[in-house]
Amino acid sequence: MSGRAPVVYASEHEFEPLIVTLLNSFVVDFAARTAVGGTDLSYFMIKQLPIPNPADLKHDTGWGCTYAESISSRACLS
Image (cartoon, rainbow, N blue to C red; front, top):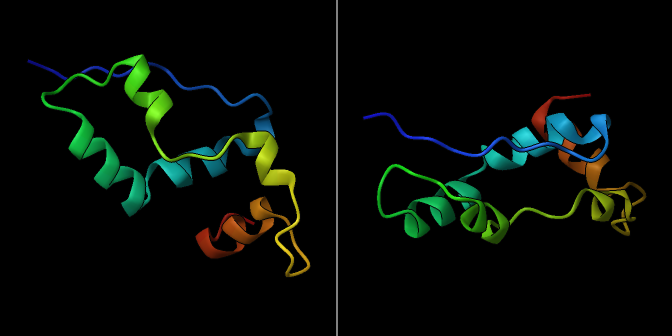
């Protein structure tokens, strides 16, 4: 049997690499592994994962950059 997961789209194309980066993080991996009992990842489980809204990634961190810029610099996406 193969596992299945819903397709995830970002509202803005500039955030697609950031969403992929966040989905590959240890925090999201741990949350997904604890929430999923089998091989299927349903829509309500995706909604519960600790991923910020793409609109929130535009906010200033207080360190002179946005959250998107901070994540990009750490993930080597820039």
